[in-house]
Structures are given as structure tokens and as C-alpha cells.
Image (tube, rainbow, N blue to C red):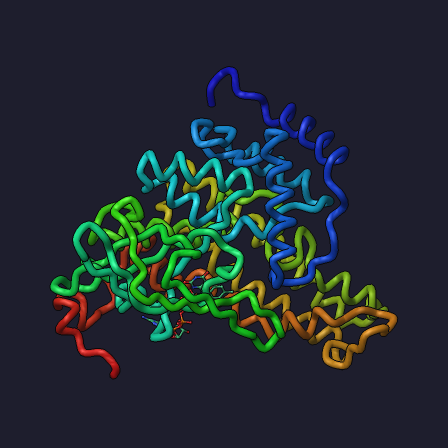
Length: 409
Ligand SMILES: Cc1cc2nc3c(=O)[nH]c(=O)nc-3n(C[C@H](O)[C@H](O)[C@H](O)COP(=O)(O)OP(=O)(O)OC[C@H]3O[C@@H](n4cnc5c(N)ncnc54)[C@H](O)[C@@H]3O)c2cc1C
């Protein structure tokens, strides 16, 4: 820390006053953002934070940030809990895509996009998963072919959260079919509005439509769209995935104002039992205890892993540990909410005296917590191979030129 850096306590006090005087109270959580209006509101709030000098707390000053520490960010986030914050910009815009650009972007890319992101002018998405599968990311088949001084992109991406409201996407494509799968990929910064890009929204079982599928038909991109180096997109993807695991596991320094995705500081089970007047039930009390213990462990684990990574005692891949625990905990909390609520979890009707609607919806959505940001099985692989140093999983296609790899028809 430089000597002239504002101490965390003073920064926290200044943030507390500004938040109280400038932001409205936090609205109820209504799930993933389903309308452009929600995104416009987030952009507006982000602009407010930027103008007041509270945006991009851990981003460098030369790119519009404050150049402060994760401790400043943590203090600001805690203070911001009671207020309406542009939390939907955290993932993937700030904590994943902007963080990746900061590490791997050219100076021009960083100067063009990072201040724009911090001002709320640009929303970014990640375009990685494909209809043929997301876990084997290096096996993707969206292609970018050289045509004179341009790249021509063709293929399709899927499960892109919020792409319908985004300005740019980090898109991984195959640029070389003569080398093994990890060595022929390139990351592009793709304007979502470019000619040849079609975005379709996907309706989920919960009714939400935030997921998108994109189709690329002869989309022309210049060399200035390449992030990192041509054919070295696996490095860019690996950096991006590390940021994603950190974001989902709760250790990213680039998130602002976000409560952990379920429950906040306390387990939601206590509140559900209170609302449904079940606090006297012995079995419910045991569930509350277990759920609360998991929340305490989660918070301690996040603090421990964050410290370990920051201090260099743990590799960045250790973010997968909190990512895995967060998923397991989310499943436990969601299942327990249904157990405590009983029939109320599925029989809620508009106007019922106790609102239990979100319990059933959370249950329907819970599989997402073990898939988003790479599945929990893949997180276990990362932990075993890159944290514990165990041998790599065998793969028949690892050293074979990609054009010779047998794929489904
Ligand atoms: C809420 C949410 C948000 C998302 N947002 C985005 C986004 O913005 N952009 C984007 O590109 N994608 C996004 N995704 C997609 C996500 O990255 C993929 O769902 C994930 O990588 C898994 O890919 P898949 O669904 O194709 O499953 P598959 O890869 O088909 O895997 C199916 C099952 O097989 C298991 N499996 C596969 N390979 C192995 C292995 N080697 N060892 C052990 N088990 C294995 C997996 O764990 C999984 O359980 C999002 C997903 C969710 C749920």
C-alpha cells in the first residue's frame, strides 16, 4: 500500500455517508435480469458510482478505477448492502470480462473499454459455451478464418447470460485446426451489434429469459479485436475462467455491492421459518443450525482462500475450492428451504399472506449453481490437478491435431 492511500476506515466512513445520501434502499431480489430496463437502471447507478469516485475500486487509476485494495472494496461492499446497487454488472462484466481485459488486453483495448465499463457505458458478456457442450471448452468448433486482413467468424454460442443487453462479448473461436485443441484458439472482443450476429433468448423452467444463444454468420473482425495472442486463446480462456471461479466463489476483488448469491450474511432458512411460524419445531431448529453453520464456514473459507491467493500461499486455481463450496452450500440452503417450508414451497399463490414464491423458484434454478462458471465436477478436476498437483485427467484428443479428432456428426 502506498503511504498516501486513504485508510480503509476513512474510505468506509466516506462511502457510508455517500451511500446514505445518494442511493435508494435495495429493492427486493427479483432474480436474474429479464428486461433492458433493469440493465439501463444498472448502467445509471454505475454512472452515479463512477461520478462520485466509488467505481472500479480495485481497477488501476489509469483505466478509470481507484487503484485501492481488496480491503477497501470489501468495506464498500459491506456498507452498500442496504442500498440499490448495480449488482448485475458484477458478473460477468466487471469481475470476469473487464478483469480479463485488464490482464490481457492491449493498451488500446484497455483505454477504450475499461473506463467505459466503469462508467456504465459498456456491458460485457462471455461467449464460451457451445451447443455441443461447455465443459470441454477447448473442443469448441466456432471458427474464425483469416480473410486478407480480417477474421471471419462462423458458429454458435449458448448460455450467454445477459447477451441480449450487452455491447461486447469475449468470444473464444478456433483459428487453427492443424494443432491440438488447446493450441488453436483465439479470444476476440466481439461487438454484439456487428453485422452477422443474431442473438436469441432462451426461456428457462423458472420463466426467466436471461440466457441467450448467438449465431455468427460471416461476422468480420479486425486484428484489433484479438485479446491476447492469435492461437493462444487458451491462455486468455484460462485467465477468464480463473476470474469466473473467483467471482462465483466470492473471492474476486472486482465485484462491488454483491451479497453472496444466496442468503447474504445469515442463512435464509431462519427467515423462512420465522415467516411461516415454524421456529418452535425441533427439527426445523436443527435445520436452521446446520444451514447457519454452512454460512459461517463459507464466509471463513472465502476469507481464508482470498488471503491465501493474495499472499501467494495458494495458486489462483484455489478459487475453485470456494466455487465448489458455494455450489454445495447453495444446494443445501435451497433444499433445506423447501424442507422447512413444506407444502408452502409449492402451493404459493399471489396474495397469500406469507410470500414463499421464491422458495420454489430457487429450487427449480438450483442446478445452475453447480454448472455456472464451469461445473462442480470440473472444479474438482481443477482442485486435484492444479491445487493438489495430482496427475492430469487422461484425454484421447490432447495431442492430436484438432482436424483429426473424431467428433459427433
Ligand atoms: C447460471 C449460468 C450462467 C452461465 N453463463 C454463461 C455465460 O455467460 N457464458 C457462457 O459461455 N456459458 C455460460 N454458462 C454455461 C456454463 O459454462 C456451462 O453450463 C458449463 O460449462 C457446463 O457445460 P454444459 O452445460 O454444456 O455441460 P456439459 O459440458 O455437457 O457437461 C454435462 C455434465 O457432464 C459433466 N462432465 C463433463 N466433462 C467432465 C469431465 N471431464 N469430468 C467430470 N465430469 C464431466 C459436467 O460436470 C456436467 O455435469 C452458464 C451456465 C449457467 C448455469
